[in-house]
Amino acid sequence: MAKSELQFSDKDLHHWKVIEVFRSALLKAVQDKELHSGFQDSDRLVKHADYLSLFLKPG
Image: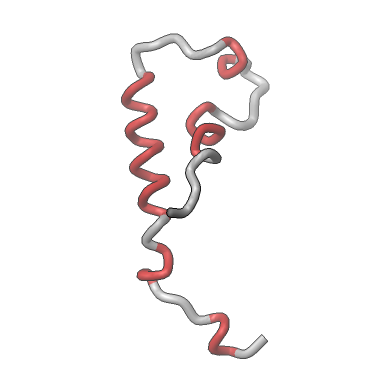
C-alpha cells in the first residue's frame, strides 16, 4: 500500500457526526419511554442506540 493511500483528513470523516447526532436525538427521544423488553436485558452488549445506528447508511 502506498503511503499516500493511508493519508486522510478530518474532511474525510465528516459523516461520523451524523451518527453522533442521531444517537443523541434517539437517546433524548426515548428517555421517558419504555423500551422493548429485548433492549432491557442487562446481559445485552449492544444497546438500542448502537443497534439502531446500524440502519444509517452513507448518502
